[in-house]
Image (tube, rainbow, N blue to C red; front, side):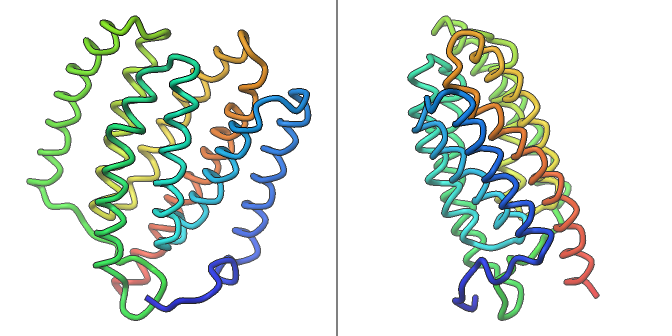
Amino acid sequence: MKIQNPFKLLNKFELCLWLTSVAVVILSYVLSGFEGLANTICSLIGVTALIFVAKGHVLGMILCIIFAAFYGLISLHFRYYGELITYAGMTLPMDVFALISWIKNPYKDTHEVKVAKMKKGQTALMWIATVVITVVFYFILKALDTPNIYPSTLSISTSFLAVALTYFRSPYYALAYAANDVVLIVLWTIACFTDTSYIPMVMCFCMFLANDLYGFYNWKRMQKRQLD
């Protein structure tokens, strides 16, 4: 892949989406009384990661790894063990594998990753693994007395699907992440009733949702262009 300033690769809409995401996260930090600086930094890393993932740029995956580590620590603080296990124990290592996959599969001599179409065997294995992981982690979370266990378990399911689809370089990674965003908006909204410093996390995932929906749209465009 060519090495160049990644922000120069963003078109006007993408730059506007990124700047809006950053502004919303910072504004939520201000409105929460300047509480939760770590949450805000984590959110800024996250929204920056997603705009580059939406571009199919390897920088997005690097930032996703950093975000997963940071987010896992924040989840530990609030005792959201499902999120901690998901991001530190599953998403982070799978993001590393996805990064390797992306580096090995550039589209020609460009910044873009090569979009792939999943085989039937890969799809079947992914869904079987998702069911198994969901059941196993439900009982783990229950044993840990995890708050809001049902949305926490659903978050694990959607997260696994998302990182698996990211590894396979499928446009549908973005829809899986969008579903995960909705679950996390609910989880962190509940947390805000206890501690308003988590408001930036709610706003973070609202902007994640916007970025992931755009990511699906742009990856489908990439796929069409690469096949032409």
